Image 1: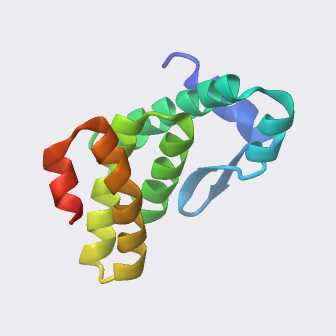
Image 2 (image 1 turned 90 degrees about the vertical axis):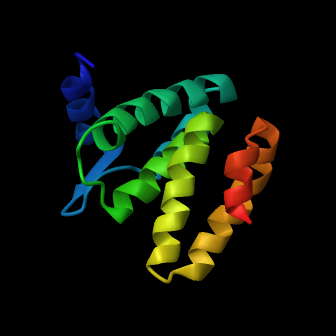
Length: 130
């Protein structure tokens, strides 16, 4: 991603990406902004780009992803419409929450994942939801 740093700085400058001690977060302000300006297909393209950047940054390397970042990655991937990746990332997130005894949050994610995994025909991953 050759222009990642430039895109990140631009997004930070206009408030579309937020920073905190926990890391980077894509602002919730982006949702209504995109809805008013872009059609659904273009919105998903923006989310796909954000998801690809965050996925590469947080998931595909040795980075120790924090829970807040993991939740944000799951949210952005879902908005991007990339269901295979969403299923993988969110399944790990649900298991992580379950292991932390955050059963209610894990259950919501498992219930969200079940129809997605059924639609994807991923019987093995579907069985992990039960």
